[in-house]
Image 1 (cartoon, helix red, strand yellow):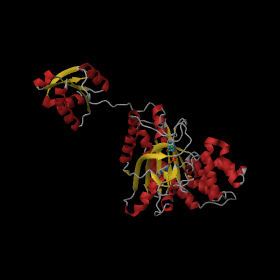
Image 2: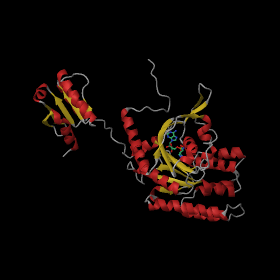
Image 3: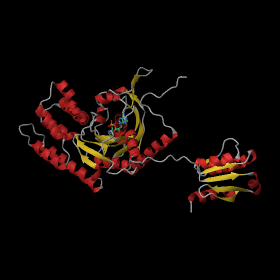
Image 4: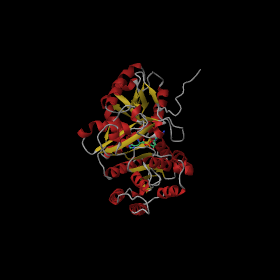
Length: 446
Ligand code: HAM
């Protein structure tokens, strides 16, 4: 018989998988709440136009898109950013500032499957709208680190690589490149770590070559890895040898932003998680300023998270001009990292109480207690069908329950139930009207 399989790259979650996933979502939610972010949600199917020409060619090529029965061009969402821009843009004037929002949802990209990359995955997204200064980046990078730290991951496990598309734009502009060429170069820089010199092929094809001197300058800028190197580059940019200088006041303001951002993260004790690295420029087209990506320290896994500032996108999508910064953590590489570090939670589904029931007559008495215990918040299980006592005790032991309640004919005739501590292997008789209190005491421990 033919068996139906999931589509390639799609995932099913058996209960033990869902325990792990819920654990991720629970701690991410907790972190976002502790930073004062409000949760929102939105549709998984969106108009195709929301992504074409805004997110950039990489994501466009990965869309799951089709025409619906009403003739609309639609796509499964590959990311949350355009959607959240629409939500915020539509009500921007009514929303209390700062607008700090987060969501957890499923996303779809028709990607080549690799370790840590699938065609459907979950992301935790957090974004701040309406804040033009680095105060928003401070808050978001701190939240990103908290989302990792909450699982016991340390600076030895991951780091956040921080870069600046703004300075890249100034630099490449000062070298005389127009917007299209700048974007071409940034595309190459984004791929450089993975492909080396081959990353420049697409640029060379599009623009009829790439001068060696230009390439050397690009590779020099890509190596910026400290505040001192940024300071030096800004000094040179303000007075380039023979080039077109970027406005000195803007460059000084940018340096001040960098100092504020790194200084605040240092004050929070988070500097050890952050690496300045101009090799990061992000593949998505809409970023305008600071950009960052989280990676495992050993560099074995693909990106754990990515984000940055995108000050033009809300307006481009029909809303008011509204600065924005945000990031997303993916659940797949993150799950792999937790596994590698032995930080995945154990699968615990055991009930608090397992009821062992003599026969049909005792069953009705047990039902009364079972329902009362469940209403009081205890996890209670019992055999759905009548089975031998011995089998029930075995099932109770295997269930992981701490307590067994035994409903035998003799006990019920005396108005009591036997309560067995399955960990200590001790047993007491409890009056029927005191069952809940006795269970509570036992579960609370000594
Ligand atoms: P992104 O870098 O495309 O950014 O994705 C963020 C994270 O989602 C990645 O670092 C990765 O962990 C995960 N991810 C992406 N694609 C896949 C895939 N095919 N399989 C498994 N995991 C994947 C964005 O999506 C931006 N919209 C983030 C953002 C929010 N920027 C501003 N706000």
